[in-house]
Image 1 (cartoon, helix red, strand yellow):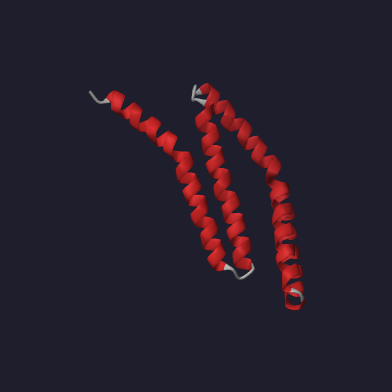
Image 2 (spheres, rainbow, N blue to C red):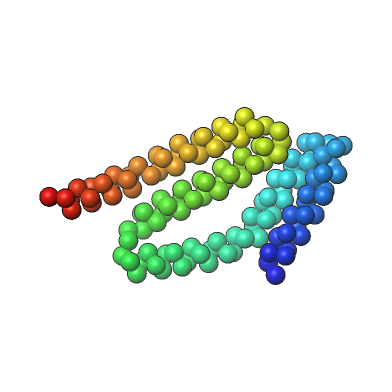
Length: 128
């Protein structure tokens, strides 16, 4: 049932955007952003359920919660950057979209470095 609501909202937003964009392009972009936010809010509850499961599994496996937090930040950066890049592309600004994606990749690399170092240190302890 949820997917039907999401698709219906997406299709309604698409039709509205196409109609409005021919008369007022700036409103088309605004409608696109609003539709994206509404769709994100609809799935936010599902994300919370997934987070609870991941936290439970992390606790059972006795994995440091810092690593889980870092992974979730990386996932969040990827999704937010993709959303921003798609909005920029919808507005006809593919150069800006490319720069958003590039910045997100750099931020992900910065967050991933401590985890990579921890894995390498663990490997070095295993090798005599």
